[in-house]
Structure formats: C-alpha cells, structure tokens
Image 1 (tube, rainbow, N blue to C red):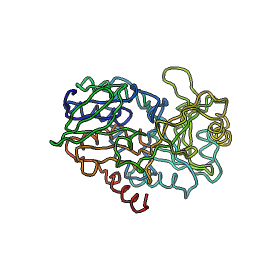
Image 2: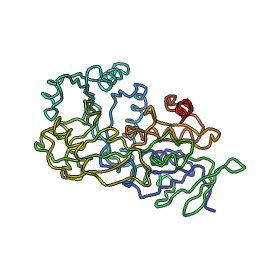
Image 3: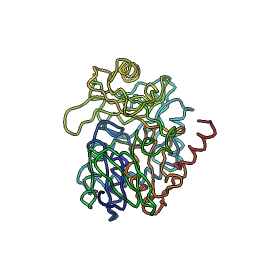
Length: 389
C-alpha cells in the first residue's frame, strides 16, 4: 500500500494540473497521477496555442468565470516568472443573426465588455488577412488572445510540487473503490493509494474513470493544421486576432503565426467537431489523413487565401463533448468525496485556471463561490434517461 493523501487528482492535463496546484497551494497533502508525461500529446491539452476570449456566445454566464480565469492566469505568470497569455484581441464572426456573432454581442452587452462590431468590409480593412462573405458580421473584443497550453501545465505542476504535491507520471489508473470508512482506495499499475477525496480530470478517458459519465462525456477526434502564410505580415499577432467563425461549411477557429521560441510555425486553425468522429481514446487513429487535410485546406483557401500556403504541420487531438457542450463540474451521485471535471467540448482550456480553483473548492468543502449551476452532472443524466440512451 502506498502513502495516504488528503486528495488524489487523476489526470494532469489542463484541468488536473490546475487542480493539483490549487490544492497544494492550500496546504493539502495531494498526489497527481498522469498516465503519460507532463505535458504530452495524447489528449486535449497540446498544440502550442489555445484561444482565450471574454466575449462568449456559448452562454454569457461563462464571463464571470472567464474574468476570474484571466486573473488566475496573471497570478500564475507572476508566480512562475513566465508569460503564458498573449493578447491579440479576438474575433467572433458569422451571419448577423447567427449564434456566434449574436451570442458574443449579447455577452458583451450583458457583461459590459469593451467591443466593436464590424461588417465584412470593415473587418478586412482593419485586419487584411480576413476575407469573409459579405453577410458576415464580426465582434472584436480587445482582451482576447492565446495561451501556451504546454507551458501552462508545466507551470501548474512545477508550482504544485514546490508546495509539496507529488506528481507521478507514466502511471495508469486501473480503478478505485470507496472503503468502509468512506475514504477511497485507488489502484494503478504501480501501486495502491488511499485518500480522503478524489478529483477526476481524465479528459477523453473520463468515462473510463467514472462510469456515471458513460454516454455523457463523448470523445471525438479533432485535427488542426498549420499552413505557411503567403503574406506573413498579415498574420502576425498584432494584425491577426485569434478568431472563431461560423460559415456555411461549419464553425472554425484559428490563430496568428506564433512561436515564442523563434520562427513562425504558420497559421493554425481547425473545424469544431472536425469530421464528427466519436472515438475510443485508446484506439483512435492518430494519423492525419488526406481527407482531414483536404477539408481544412479548402476552408483556408476560400476565406484566408493569403495564409493558405503549404502545410507545415498537423496534429490530432480530442474534444470530449457533452450533449449541450457545457462542462461537467460536480461530485458523483452517491459519492460526494469524488468530484469530476469533464466534457469541455473544445472550449474549456481557457478556463483551466478557474476550473482548478473550483475543483479544489469542491474537494475541500463540496461547495464553491463560483456559479456552476450550468455545469451540474444531473442535467445530462436526466436528458440521457429521457432519451432512453
């Protein structure tokens, strides 16, 4: 039997690394267990950049969480001594009555966020890399930008360790049980551990770690490309904000050329839900196929022609989706000592810092000052039962 802990965190990607940090900083005896390395490219928290934006069409109730997230990222930067957030501004665009533009505008108005509404012509005049259809409306919000996910994870884990946390890598969780005294026993391929509380941040593996999430948190294969830009000066962070766009081919997202280590890696972009392939994370095809590249290149050539040079790189990752694409932040039914963070549906990383704080709150007291009513597990279990799934 291994050492006893106050809390064990399963998964040290974006959410789990933040949970480990917040728990350790509060003085708890905490262990984090990661199946792969820290960081790694097998899940959902890799790929050099992640968008962070305050304008939030998904639901304006996210904005208070985002404000706290921005503050926590700034605090992490100060403590770690490294820049992790880079401000570029953000663009949310699509038809004027579409969910992306109208929802983003609504979130700005309801939360009194600085913003500008631009039509297609104004968008191209201001940011010449964009060439959208005439009916496109764009919402520019100046505080949008990008995070470096791998460095964010490293910062959280390294600081957690400085506060006394243990972090095990290359260790696979086999299962867990609730003991007669209400503590938890966790079994891995390297040993057995006992803890008062368990925090599950398993990403695409969440349903394999918590059966209550089966059919609720569904992994999906996702592909992103980096293209060489034909006119690099149009795609710098100063001239090409991060973006999220709704067009007839679907909903896409993208980034400027950005590589703080030196050298431009190209314009990065992807399509939400890519080719709508639900997968088993342990059996997913991790190769980039010709049809993956063709889908994305066709989009770039139509809307960002000055950025649609040769393919420089590509990556496969996963979204873990819920039916309504809102997160799960909750304890498990009948097991209040087990909390889960799951189902981030391709838009969660920007909030990893505050999710870590929320998971630490729930693990410590079962409550949090943050409004997470939208993210309770019961809403999805009820919908699943009603559908007969």
